[in-house]
Amino acid sequence: MTQATIVPTLETSELKQRILRFQEVEEQIVQQVRRVIVGQEEVLEQVLIALFVGGHCLITGLPGTAKTLLVRTIAQTLGLEFKRIQFTPDLMPSDITGTDIIEEDPTTGRRTWTFVPGPIFANILLADEINRTPPKTQSALLEAMQERACTVRGHHYRLPSPFFVLATQNPIELEGTYPLPEAQLDRFLFNTVLDYLSADDEMKVIDLTTTTHVAQADAVTTAEEILDFQQLVRMVPIAESVARYAVDIVRASRPVDPEAPDFIRKYVNFGASVRGAQFLVLAAKARALMRRRYHVMFEDIAALVTPILRHRLLLNFHAESDRLSTDDILKRLLEAKPLPRG
Image (cartoon, rainbow, N blue to C red; front, side, top):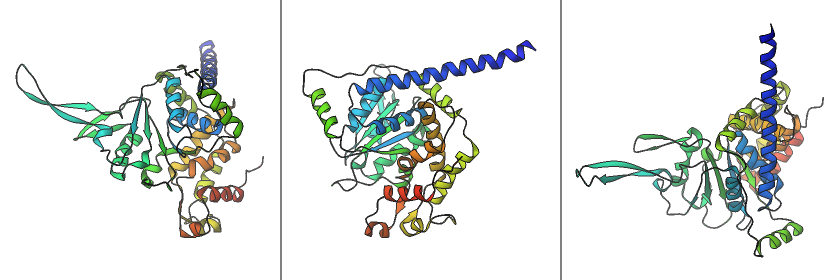
């Protein structure tokens, strides 16, 4: 009888310790990143949610908005192996995944194939300016992002764990860009948009970067701990009504769904996939835990709809002619599907 009552208590206390450690590490990461990065609170929160969920993040912004610096700083703070690929029009898939080379044994003269791993074999991969390279090379990341593995000449190689792709891209309107294929876009948890800073924040950047002071972030966690946090996030409970709200929003984004509002049918060619609903629930769990809550609220879902769905909707020419962006459509969708009360 005593044994039966002690075990749950131990489990509960251990769980509390894991939650406290999660919140402590999250605070420390933000503190370290703040040494280097000014402003962009929403962007930082979304990248951290992606890390705690085990998802990939696409960061869209104009040149000079600190996209690369943000990713590099977070990698330093997490104490993970970090690699960077600069995507260019002449980049080949083997430049990402690695390749087999023939090596000759000097003693026997025998030749053997040896696999030389590419930069994809890291914990955090920065795919810098991913839309500067043609689709053939962009798609070299597809298997890695979904399966956490890559295939070279018929051989299957597992990638290190955890594995995150943090990709930066320039807005599609810029010269020399190739839009990402829909299948690849769908594998990104977030499409995070970096905007210009406020005047006060720009002054802070000037103070931080134009003196002899060199800002540096210190590592505050490990790969094993991050994997544990990802398991912890999945244990956060979510009420059926909240999960249903997430599913309803995703389904309403599809013009073929009977419940879709009229403006969705008018402006949207294709809506979000099931992966959109999965990511919405997972990210909401991480957001709740980061905000010191142990359950998901409707507000968590609503707050994450735009960054999670903005790259999953394909608009038609009506939207283009009326100068409507995906963000405009999602704003109207949230108004059409207000937060349930109670």
